[in-house]
Amino acid sequence: MYYLLSALIGIIVAVMIAVNGELTAWYGVYPATVIIHLVGLVLVLVLVAARRPRLRPSCKLPFYAWLGGAVGVATTVFNNAAFGHISVSALLALGLVGQTVTALAFDHWGVLGTPRRAFNKKKLIGFTLVLAGVAVMLF
Amino acid sequence: MLVAIIISLLAGFTNVLGRTLNAKLTAATSQLCATLMNYVTGLVVSGLILLGLWQQLPPAAAEGLPPLWILLGGGALGVATVTLLNLTTHRISAFYLTLLTFVGQVFTGVIIDIILTKSFSWQNLLGGVLVSAGLAVNLAIDRRDGKGEVGA
Image (cartoon, rainbow over all chains, first blue to last red; front, side, top):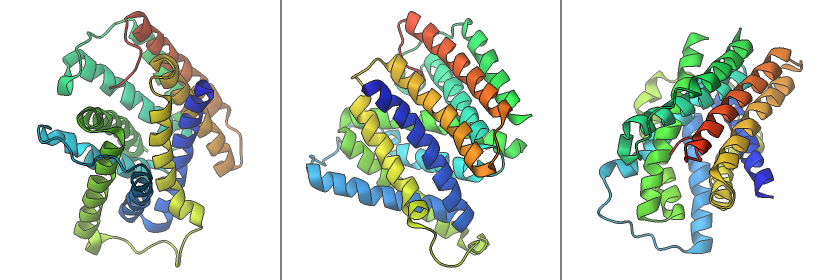
């Protein structure tokens, strides 16, 4: 069941990017981004009201721990702005390329406290396949 | 098209950066608190950007409200994604979670393109197969190296 759920998460992410793109076509990139976050916040507040967690955050957090939401805005803006200019397949595939390269760089250099793991050159085989796939989609 | 390619790649970069930062916040508080903070800061930042750019914004493309599924769908699906990820993480291996999530995205993208363009593209399907195969190869290498997940 959790395998199906994992695939479902991927399906939802793809549909979400397309729906957000439609909202962008209606209102523009920045108003759409605000609406997306507003709707999300209202729903999270409903979850918070239902579960009543302890909401006192730790004071020892580094300042950048609060920046995740701001960085999330950039992700939404980028996806909304790219929608309609390339195919949804290419947009999603390029996003996954960006994620994989960033994750590897974070691992390789231990960025933001990520445990260091040296880049395995065998992964160039996988990257070649991914880039070939993206090229086939785009050209 | 070049600009769209670059910002799609950047979306992948900010996705991992945001996830890494949120993982730290989650470790120090709780998943729900971190998600709440994520949306609060997200709304404040996007609101400030909107206010800052207000004068330069083009008028809305259409009058009135869009259909509800467009207006509310994206925000709701974002929260659904976070909730389902919390449900699934640690219940199956990170290898399968990441692989299935990625493959689900790629092939749903192919289907969405068929719906939007009302035509089937062999290039998108072949590209989807190649991208999935490449991601699977790299994730398998990660797993053999003792690291199950791509990303933070």
